[in-house]
Image (tube, rainbow, N blue to C red):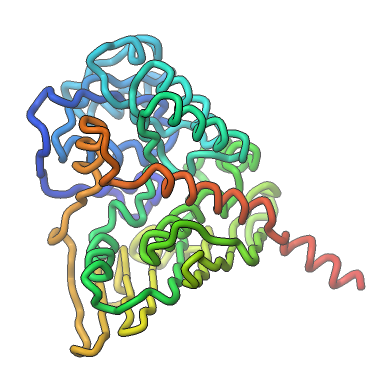
Length: 366
């Protein structure tokens, strides 16, 4: 597993089949982001059968086939969509193209699993909401910084058990290493990637709604800026936002592309969850200067201080639940309303964000 490059970070877990071989065939298409590997790992470990792969670039398909021997190469997207056996299509297209792909997938009667962020414009979200209502099919999103992180999974379980009482505040940090040389051109085009709050901020907002058990929230304040990369004027390498949920819980998060080279992984992602009876800290990918492994959870409550090292201990139940949801028409993995609300709030945060570079220029002028 690649730990230094977040774009190609693909967690692997224990196999825990929820279906028999061949019962849930899937396809992978549009391999523009390396998250497609994490998405397929999670699904196949839960029992999905990876039948087909398609991308117009042979080099991407060749690399994918090496990772998943036995997958068949489709000659076109239509071949995938017209295959009656395929139940779900997983895609990691360029962000601005993810909605159009999803609308087509659902039109063909298949469930859709997309990388985050699922949308770059509000009109896309509106179309997706309408299409899921029309078809009854699932539009799932790979919010990996919760769904594919064992410490985050366990934090949710502890909160459900009442370990810290009612959640009052969630603070999240999502720093990423940029690896400029390996990034595709679309990564630097705001029209295509959507902006930093829309993109990697989506992880933070989704986990806030989940941990706080909130149905809705309001974006109170948001900011974006480019501090280190003037050669890429459309790139935002810093962003933050503050939200208030419908149940009174508050949220602050910061995301950036400023991870220093000396860190032993692609980003020191952390989450702090304050409750009325205790608090939790997650050190998701590394415990700096002490432990190169990730998935550390610290819990303090009325029973004392606790440290849990969770790497390989919890698993990733989302993927098995998603498969069963697709087969049974349930919403145990993630409610569709929750999936879309997280996307909506990150679009709002991005739309309303103060541009720090513009503000600084204005201050200097005054």
